[in-house]
Amino acid sequence: MRAWIRLAAQLYPRPWRERYGPEFDALLDDTAAGPREFVDVITSAFTMQLFKGDYWKFAAGMALAGVLVAAAISFALPSRYVSTATVPIRNTELVEREVQAALSRASLAEIIQRPSLDLYRGERARIPMEDVIHEMRNRDIQVRQSGAELRISYASPDPRKAQAVTSALATRFASIWPDAPPTSDLAFEVPEPASLPVKPVAPNRLAFLSAGLGAGVVVGLLAAASIRHPKSVRRLAGFAIAGCAGGVVVSFLLRPRCTRPPP
Image 1 (cartoon, rainbow, N blue to C red):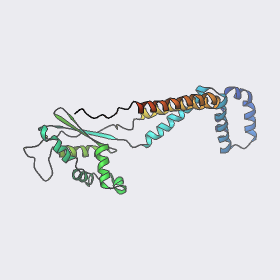
Image 2 (image 1 turned 90 degrees about the vertical axis):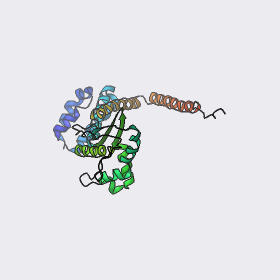
Image 3 (image 1 turned 120 degrees about the vertical axis):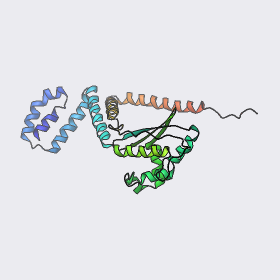
Image 4 (image 1 turned 45 degrees about the vertical axis):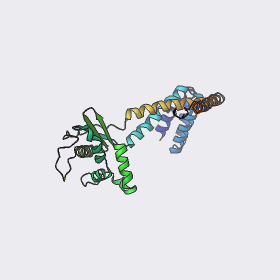
């Protein structure tokens, strides 16, 4: 533990280490070193850096803390894989009807409860099926029409399930049901195979790390400035609050008013 305490003592400002370093080492050799002393050294070094150290050193420390927190959050979030399929459009007049049918409650409920997929098991145990279908339709499924094609995508923590669900949705859009053969009035042609995602699209760990780095620097500088110059920081905060309040008032004053159309 003494080695860790000596390492933690390097966090003190350089002038303090040059003046009191030998005395600190001698005191450390003569006393019992434990976790409590280690925490005390870390806390004292942090406080001294905040009050007597350099702004940029404290900001760098806070930036490192922000990066570590952001990294922990990004790795705690589940990965999301997106599979995509393209369905050629045959009859544009029937697109809306078949899209509504493919995304209907009965269609999505059947896909969710397929034994081979068994989607949203945890959510189904907590919330009603209607809410599960709503989340699936609005969060995980994307349907976009591009010219004579319909692009269908589905996001899932499991790349295999993402591909399987996308294939099932594309088949539904093509109106090829298990109990009925294709008919001549289909809105879509037979879809292409759904892609198997290799890399997750989320979470974007680089964005998390960048946000943590920026937030740590800003928080570190503001904290150091607020402790060293509390009056100036309070004055700036007052100006910022007044500016925000003024902006809100102006936005309400400049709201467009509803007018009746001329007869």
